[in-house]
Image (tube, rainbow, N blue to C red):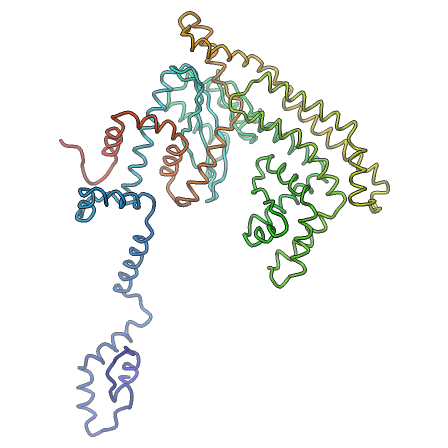
Length: 554
């Protein structure tokens, strides 16, 4: 056993002896030799290592913890990096960081408290503006972040009492993964109303296109209307267009398969940097990033595939010809995408929808405009409908000739004896669905023509005529408060993605919401920073946070 123990020691530079290498052969002195070896440092160390072999040791755990601390120290974030930079120019700060044992200000808790303190200053400023306004609208939209949590973005719209301009202020992100029902979202709306005292100020509500939010039967808007009768529901016009196009496509089997396959084509490249890089050897055009909840993603995808159809086919053929360089998934999908892209039906639908999107993309941009002229909006919708109707009546023959000249005659199929008649019916069905849905979604838009009355508000404010036209100014404020789109709410999601990507995806909800507020309302933050008492306000907010050290002198 002693021999084995010596073998386990195995340290570099270990003294060689008979017990661990050559063996003990002088049996007359065996007893004395055993007693002497048992007292040796080599034997004791070897026995300890044998006993501890395979077990977790506290000294190793401490060493691993130290190693983790060193790695974390060498990978400083923005906050600690800036703090170290400032300390190199500020001797007092440097001495504090080097010598302080209790409060250095570098812990996550301190960082979160500082972030929360700054966001509280911004929130207080927003509360002050809302307190001095007469009307407020609430805008909600929901998305999934990179951690797959359902985040609800809340924005309040109101007219500033001094400038007479409409402001849309981001309030917070709330994790609604546990309950996305209308009742669950209603609780959030009630909390916002109570927090900002909006019971008698809430005049409008607008949400995204989700049925649970905007449905006429049991939707959130109905429940909010019951509690706050003055809260007019305004559907996001750009979402309406998304719904028009998506419903038109989903109602037709061939179109639904077409768009699902196109989405899969986009995912094929976005999920692999190797595939994206290889595609650049065939075309410099990048695939649009996957955003299937936004219809303009499909528009960009259709236009890209239509324009570079032959290049995509060449790429997928290259994958098949060099199968040893690609994974099994890429090889299997490549053959399917070649069949799809080379199909005459695909080519026909690409041309049809590229023509449709040339009209609807312009309309989409109009409806996404933040300050929207409703009369102009109605005019553009009517123009789009007229152009679509004109396409339906006159475009098919031209498209059919284009397909035949580029792809050749259609092969006869068992279910399609007359290809031209079949595609003529499909062509008409696509346009009929879009026109019908456009009328259904935007037919009541004329009810909002009164929003054109917002024009006088700036003239009244600029010429200091509020006292002379008090009621007109108040009416203009009310009209300007009513939102026509949730585009501002949707833009908060880009901040959500940046913060969760570049900070960390597992950060707390309060930190996430505070960082988002600072990022989105940076214009308001800069305005606050110009006030000489800004930093005093931040300090006062900071010392209010709960901690073991009492910063308040009593």
